[in-house]
Image (cartoon, one colour):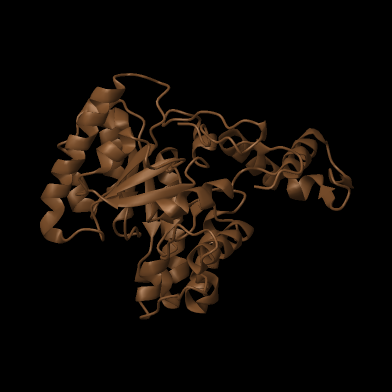
Length: 351
């Protein structure tokens, strides 16, 4: 997969590089920008992938949880297996395909265990990993144990993406104890953790809330309070997990619409607060999200200079901000990792 491979209007100082599930994890964890969730029962996914209908999408997730009824689980499993087999036959070992990373959002740990018995080596060469819904200290160990066993059984690279979205983290009285327990589980299975996801819709639903088209998740104070604590636990220098932003529920093909302006507003706040990546539910959201991660020329030059310096303070590339080597070092590392995946815009380019 390579971002913006067919873009004519984007001029890069440094082109985005190809990536796949076998890329270095420190780069790959930033490669999941817009991750589009689709019901695993959807019959048109294969043809859309073949026709590149999900333009510039780096990751898709086949959902067997909230997007389908419980009565459809067996159908979702059958459709997923059929899709993976069809993709495997098309790719047939080719390395330069532009298919996105493919993840499967299982329903729960029990269903994951059952479904894992149907998976074969050829399926797992296509799958990059699994999303674990309602992830908490009670089910987290089992989720990752199943994943580890599956990875070892077929000697295949597989990742888990826990989704933190239930009441144990949302409610104040249990939050910090629960986050510490989740942190311990992730440390035990660190090699299998690609990134963390949060459920803004699920968190809101616990209080019967839903943000409107003019309101970001950061305006819903009870949810924003929880999100900042999640970032506090998992984005620390010691852990450096990538935490993905919650879904924006509104969509439109009109870039000047309130729906898209709202997405851009929330996306900017995501980035400023430290989230990277965003769950999307409509193709119109894909480019908006992924283009937001193209690295600005100024940031790239400052990041390089910071990492090359031994210490001290100096003016930024444009002469209008301070670069302080030690405090800005972690920021600089992230910028250079993102530059590999999303590229660096030309000087003065408007993205």
